[in-house]
Image 1 (cartoon, rainbow, N blue to C red):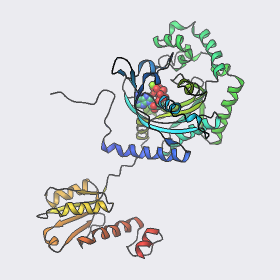
Image 2 (tube, helix red, strand yellow):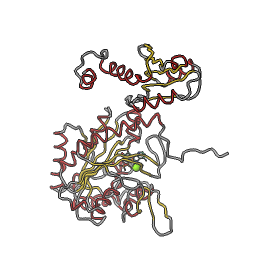
Image 3 (cartoon, protein in one colour):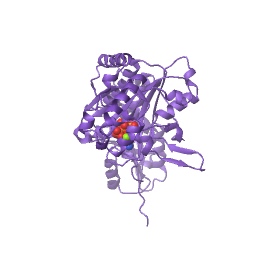
Image 4 (tube, rainbow, N blue to C red):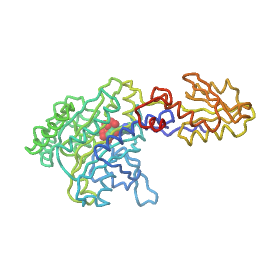
Length: 444
Ligand code: ATP
Ligand code: MG
């Protein structure tokens, strides 16, 4: 029989891990909320032309896209990144006409890239990202970095550093391109096949090569800093100044060009410095882009954004030994002993309606076996429905931590649970005076 497995480069996120994912997503939502970024959900596939723009030289567009066609005519592509879809939507919905720019959104979801799978690199993975479109300001570039940095810090990560660079404005890049062509044409033979292609398509991209990165040819390549226009230089200085104000440490890396073709001015990458991360060290990365809004048919408008790899974020948290919320405990376990018919089931329903996370087992297993389950499932209170108590409309409730067991009338169960859980939360006996609003209400 066929042995069914997840497709290469994909993975199940199992229940034991989804709790961590929810925690990350809660942090993201909270931070985006205070920064005033609303969530956007764009389709998982789009017209290929949304991602593949003419002459794009990036690896992602040229080698990593999952493209398909259903009728020989339209080519569709599973999204490899979030920015293009968001900008397409920005133009399609005429958000550029809004009087209150910038347009600020965040997204999170699956991305697809045909890459060689390894730890921290998958074919289906999740990104969280933000886009801020319509206003160009060094403060916004800094705000964007600060938002991502804040997510990483809120997760408890310590071993991260911000690498930052500027690609300059259009003129700076035209000038730099000439300088690079002049330099690399002498050294083409010593470079990898991809670099030969990059030399023709976009020489700037040569600096992004992972194969030749450490070679002498790369190390001696002229720096873009020397080709920067006065305006670009000034803009970059202001971004750095804003980061200083925010007390976000950074390192200027004049070889950082980023993998996509649409970036201008500020580009950044936040990497892990933890020894276990290997070459998959980038946690989030992004930059300012020009020309994308125009590409989709909108006016000339600039934007800035980043994307964060969530699998990588979780791997880094694990590498740094950060304990993410793994509370899998139950408040209540309801067990039946003997001929008790549907009473346990009804009691479980009652506890759930009262908001208690409740486990209920319909099988008639022994008391001992059921208590083993109670232990494994980390249940805090157990309702034991036995025949003799039931005859008086009563059940036993046992609280695991204190080992206290009491016999209560069935219609008082929720009251007893409320009192016990409240007592635990506030550290006093039910009925004692407590400053908190809900206890006071109870006591009144
Ligand atoms: P890399 O240099 O690692 O290939 P990239 O430049 O292709 O990264 P971006 O397109 O900037 O990555 O994506 C932003 C973030 O998404 C990365 O910093 C990383 O955390 C994550 N990421 C990118 N590709 C993958 C992948 N195949 N699997 C898991 N996470 C990924
Ligand atoms: Mg990549």
